Length: 447
Ligand SMILES: *[C@@H]1O[C@H](CO)[C@@H](O)[C@H](O)[C@H]1NC(C)=O
Ligand SMILES: *[C@@H]1O[C@H](CO)[C@@H](O)[C@H](O)[C@H]1NC(C)=O
Image 1: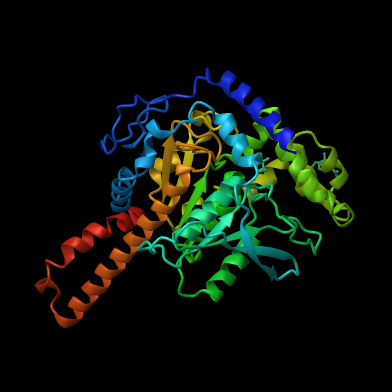
Image 2: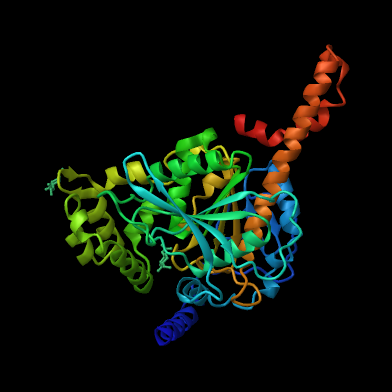
């Protein structure tokens, strides 16, 4: 096992070496400082689509929340590429996050949740290890529940473990959502979860809401898990119960991604773990899907088609499948702020010019893109492989959003009080100014 991983790491190293010459890996000059409010005027190249923070760019519609994010991200020293010693090796960062064993395994408490069709999903509450002293609960995130959505293969990667550990230390309650049949969660029906079908996640979040009515809920997805999270946010709109969401290295143009196919070693590792996952359930799945065809498939597209488009009594075209599963199909309904953390050298997603829907971030006030020049797929290594600055940025984002809504609600409540005391609205102009300012984010949404 260890030898195998070493082999993989060396392979990654070699590939990284080859890919360094790729045209899309643009790096910014090291002297580039944060906070220059030059607005994204489009243009080609990854340069300058939004203001810079550290070595990254924040792309999004200008709003009060965008300002707050710019300010708080600007104070994060870890966004400076100067401290990223792994920046030249995107493939190695990716391979380490997917294949390297964790430093310390997580301790879980598992809840099985029975869904309305008698299917099962598993919710893993992360309860340890609590390394070092727990920080004095940082204001804002204390006792928030963080729903973690793994990528489409369902594996709990090193990346997710590190994120959960950090979140735990900062006073959150991380809980991992395991799809049907994933990660030791038994498959009790003959249904697997398609790429962007949020029905199960809906029931899980509703259950979390019921169990913890007072807690703030946030969600974070890894890699292709964004397909599920964004579908959920789109379908549920303003009744999603979530306060904010982060997608780490999302695949936003999912259908194109399946059609284009990534390099063979990612395809192979992704296919292998998915095939291993379903091979336990061949007999059950045979009744409804072309499971043998899926096990023989040599591309991710063929695998997906065999499992979800064809089968007994089912003949769905690839296009029809994506009409129902595209993560961005209901994107206009999304009603919570979403941060997508992407790196320009993500080897799984591909070159940013073609694989990031720029117009989404430029037109929808709920979507922010933090684009870093380096980081691989879900890597974002800082000084060493033990820390990912992406996790610090994720928690900082949630903190900013929590604070933002807190202030907004307080101001709103105060203005209501003032309004009650003074029956003449024209008598209280001073109270309205700050209100207008904080609500500018909301207003820019309603246009
Ligand atoms: C998901 O994770 C698995 C295992 O960690 C990895 O092999 C695979 O490449 C990942 N897939 C995507 C699309 O991120
Ligand atoms: C599915 O439908 C298409 C046309 O709609 C047809 O060409 C194809 O043979 C059908 N496949 C199966 C397995 O029924």
